[in-house]
Length: 385
Ligand SMILES: Cc1cc2nc3c(=O)[nH]c(=O)nc-3n(C[C@H](O)[C@H](O)[C@H](O)COP(=O)(O)OP(=O)(O)OC[C@H]3O[C@@H](n4cnc5c(N)ncnc54)[C@H](O)[C@@H]3O)c2cc1C
Picture 1: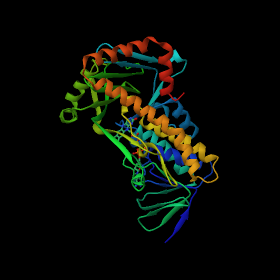
Picture 2: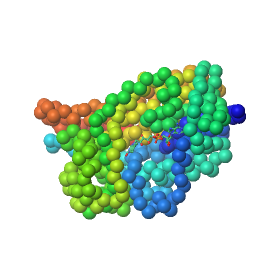
Picture 3: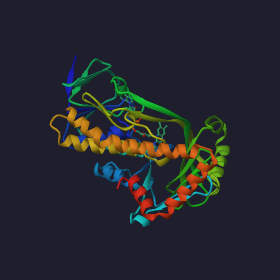
């Protein structure tokens, strides 16, 4: 049996685990990164079509990724300068970058380009050791932690960092309880070429409990995320018939939508673990929390976890000491829960059909829209400023 010792072991090399690996390696630490499916670095193939999985990355996280030299090539990135959100009975709120003296509110980026930029950095750093293997056994107590791989080799470190996604294997090995609340909605994602220019505006409609977002992409394309309970019916439509439904739900604001690429649906679940750590284990990203996508905060919260943990570990003698992990939780749990509750509250408010609530939510949107100070504070918070 071989045992290898590292400063830290990261399980999961999605966006969150990959960013964490680069951030810690740049501090000069020796990191083991376990990823079952390391991405293929084939930029040419990726350039020919559009990824259906896209993210709105906040300026704070863009800055963080730039600091890691892991921000992708700009021609695939669409800065958003305005946001236009519509309620279901005349309510409206809009946000504008010039109003808060900034160049953009968020940036729309495809998953694969972000992942490629991070993994290129991983391959350029010789203190990140990649294992494309599944962990079989996790051991952790107050003194030490390790994972045993399929071939019997053991990776040992003072801290195991779990970034292995919503159904985290690492988390399942601990006694951390997760409160999982299904929304009974799916998020349907798809990309389109649009007839009218999108004007770098992100648009969103709350209608009959559904939430539809149009996110601008470069070269007169958009990506849509439709949170809906009518998944089976909508997914059974042809691409063209579905595009017409998307155009109608979006009030034909961008004219005809021409499908480009595949459409797919993913289940929306609010997951709130009671804790973000166990002895010598820290949870990050979707392993620690999942959220309704209506504010585009899923992966932004994960990058927030990475920034806080990487900063704490920079000054820590023993990465796995309980005071370090308690501090990590103290700095993240409140921020994560506030964002989860904010998005959940908005979703529930617009899901309810009662007439007084319809009046309240639409009037509320209009009221906040007229309160420049509060409105700008809200958007600054979402931008991580
Ligand atoms: C289909 C889909 C579409 C989405 N679309 C959006 C969107 O439009 N906007 C948005 O904000 N959010 C979206 N989300 C949510 C967003 O993808 C997540 O918030 C974000 O990807 C979380 O990143 P992560 O690195 O924490 O987890 P993940 O991206 O899930 O990465 C986890 C990684 O761990 C690896 N792994 C898992 N188990 C093991 C193991 N035992 N050993 C080794 N490796 C392991 C996996 O291969 C994977 O690479 C979407 C999610 C899904 C599933």
